[in-house]
Image 1 (cartoon, protein in one colour):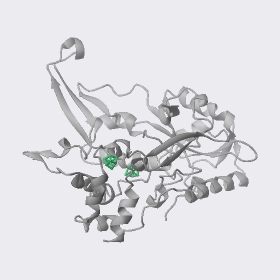
Image 2 (cartoon, rainbow, N blue to C red; image 1 turned 30 degrees about the vertical axis):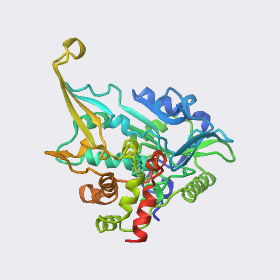
Image 3 (cartoon, rainbow, N blue to C red; image 1 turned 90 degrees about the vertical axis):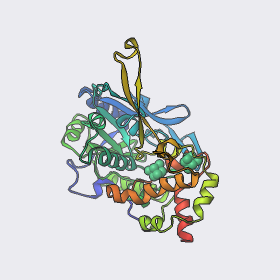
Image 4 (tube, rainbow, N blue to C red; image 1 turned 135 degrees about the vertical axis):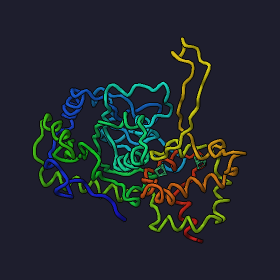
Length: 376
Ligand code: SF4
Ligand code: SF4
């Protein structure tokens, strides 16, 4: 298992030495971000879940809340401390800002006036953003809509101190600690000598922002508390992806009977693709004949998230090419874990566990892989 350790475990990657500041000073950091003209987005409690939304200050954060997660199950629960980031990933991912569920392409929407600042980005989510960067910006033809939203976005990451019931980032080499792709990384420490954050900058603008917070150099006890938090997160991962060549396993098992078994349970609802932070399928629709009072023009082009589980998404000339639930689930999983390597050079899964938690049929991608591997 290639679990990631706290950033401070790898000297030389940090632009500043690790510093600490009390939890009560978090607003100093948020104010320093807002003074630079960013639109601050972070975790909030909404509709019985921890979602991402605009925040004004640390008072908006889910203080004292955590979540219990398992296959097809998500519940908020009060913690017995005041942790601000003591939860795991919820149904939202940052792609709802960088690659929104619906966008008007023509006439093109204006890019956001204020660049985004994302607070509380977990290591698996940084890995997912890096994957979507490769998908939308890494080829010969950049997606200008994605680029306009991604450009300049500031990222304040938070290392995980405990993992959720469906997390398996450690076995996908995507967590639980952030090692790159952030401006600032925080580790929340709750024990003696008090509620505080260990912080490090990953970019010069992150260092500038941290410079406006009253900090003190981190002591050996802060560093070892951060390591203990990371060890706790690794030890509490609710799931594990079998350590195998998944590309080869899936390529050699297109006809495995497990595809029929999972098809009998799968509702082809597409929830797994909607919550997945790396899924990027979309459909484009031209709408003509709109009145000028509604739109200022005669026609518009819209883009919306789509899913390999919808019949229309595989429609080629003459009909859909994946008519059965078996073929649609197999397409999703073999792309995510296998052919994604052929296309983008990485796995398409970062082990966030969302597809397991939010699948109404409790289908678990790690369990499906294990079942195929057990009888290849
Ligand atoms: S695997 Fe689960 S979430 Fe995905 S389409 Fe099937 S039933 Fe829906
Ligand atoms: S496939 Fe599932 S576990 Fe993997 S990144 Fe997508 S939602 Fe997360």
